[in-house]
Image (cartoon, rainbow, N blue to C red):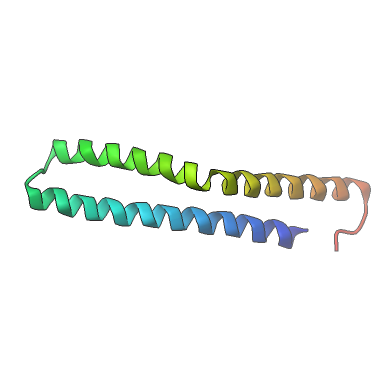
Length: 92
């Protein structure tokens, strides 16, 4: 049971890391474009904050169902693990 929880949690963290990496690459690319156009300083920061918020919303809209399923699976596995631990049944 612990192995199943670890697999689902690892998949969730891997997916989260992939999304964060993609957002960082897009942000870096946008920063370079803004700097080459001549937009620097506070205006660049404000535009990048807006872009970051849009990317985060887009990521959750795109992967929201996957996150919901994985989080539900983790919670169900934890519930089953807790139930088996209190009943004395072997988990293996």
